[in-house]
Image (cartoon, rainbow, N blue to C red; front, side, top):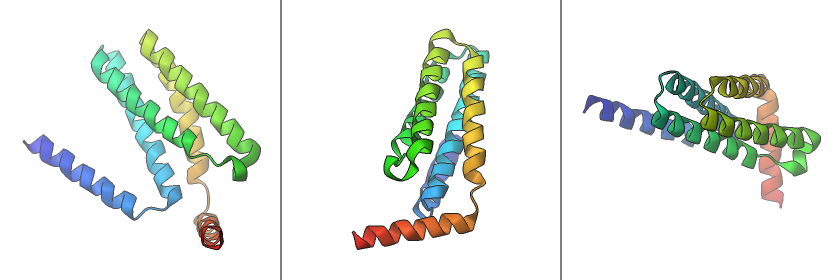
Length: 142
């Protein structure tokens, strides 16, 4: 009973955070969620909890797929193409982790994802604000 209440509270808290978040913050939350799921998947493999492993890898894969789907090729150019390829590579490695029950694949994806996340987190607030303002102005003009 207690666990269900905690989960419900966490779900509502997340909805509130998302409702007040800008695009940058949502991507940060997605990346953090993927990292968390990958850590859970790794622990599940180590404990030979294959059903839990499948669930966590599936959720992490869905998040990475969503991140890949958010890429804007018109704006990002070569960086976007490289990120698309990197996300695709990560998804392939997670398939390998699922098939082989090998945590080294998860470690590799975790390392890549953390590197992308740290770069994303390093974008100064002023740059984020300016980019969001430009995007909003373009959306209202078009």
